[in-house]
Amino acid sequence: MSELLVALLFLLYPDGKAPSRQWRVVGWVAAAATTVLLIGTYLAPGSIDRFGMVNPYAILPEAIEPIGLAPFITLFGCLAASLIAFVLRFQRSRGEERQQLKWLAYAGAFLLVGFGFIFFGPNRATDLIGVILLSIAIPGAAAAAGIAIFRYRLYDIDIVIGKTRGLRRLRGVRDGRVPRDRGRCRDARGLARR
Image (cartoon, rainbow, N blue to C red; front, side, top):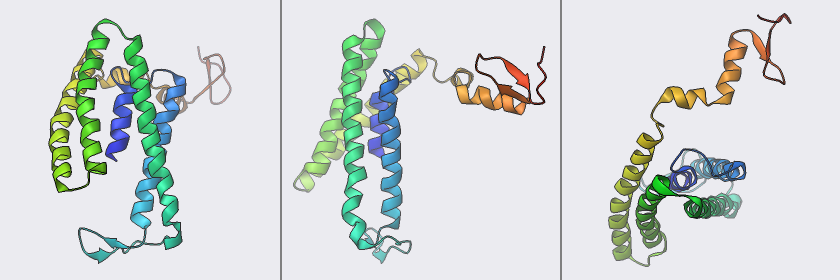
């Protein structure tokens, strides 16, 4: 789950939008891979490590276990793609946006190295180093995100909701209007509103 959040952080930072329409796919694929990974984990056979008991919800056969690696690899591919998007955004940025990206890059370096120590470290000492680096990186990334949230007024829920196209369509359905191609609306009975 944390991999999805990191991928979305690097993909959507600092203005809450993907760099272009094509980059939105990365976020959706990462969310889908995380969903499949979580469902597969909950339904996988075997014991639950921390509780010393057998998974009571295990309905998947053991033969499917190697397939569970696919969403994991997909998720890390999306993480790599979001880092590429971040680098491309950094290269195009100027002024204040570039400074915000530098703050996140600084915290992100600790995140990547910390995850590297935890996932690929050979012993408990490297796990401890990874945890220390993550304990520095997570508040740093949160501070960088907080700066961007206040800079771009992403905290204002009315702005976020107002930019959501789907909500406008739902409002039209609620009011009895059906959207047309050119943005005009008509009454659900077919009569034009004036």
